[in-house]
Length: 187
Image 1: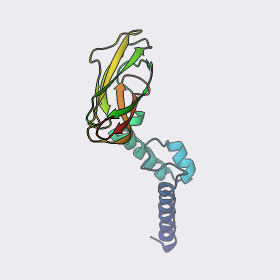
Image 2: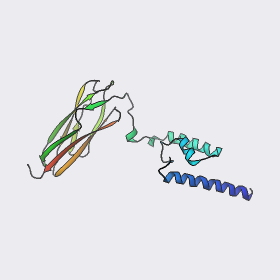
Image 3: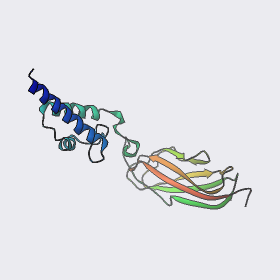
Image 4: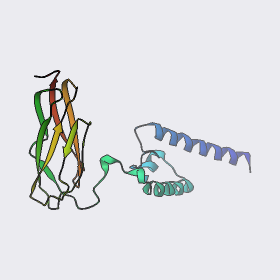
């Protein structure tokens, strides 16, 4: 192989490595670590003109498309039919409460969509906030309730806790918030 050809190949490889490295470390373009990036955008950014490089990109795109880690929880869509739900209120302030007390709030919601509402899960942000939710589907137009029991234990001062509801809605997650000012010893 001639020296000019070797040098040319080394320069081409080095240029590709530099372009790929720049793309990976900047926020301006897609990267191999960004599965949402499309090939056209990648090719524009990298300005790749080699047919072999484009074939490698096509193979890389196929690998990314098959990657189960491609979807994130925030972008996940429900597997079945999608509906909507509306809460009468999503925030509640218990005001001033005592340590070791039990405080209950019932959040009412309505299935405002055209498909049955299926609540997959309801989870409190800590063990002191325990939600109860309907396990059966809620028909369109019907109401349901999520009961949240907050037991502050030995917590004190201003407290904010969340309950995250996962259902066949878009977005998939809804958040309920409770607040309280917990007084040490009692009110």
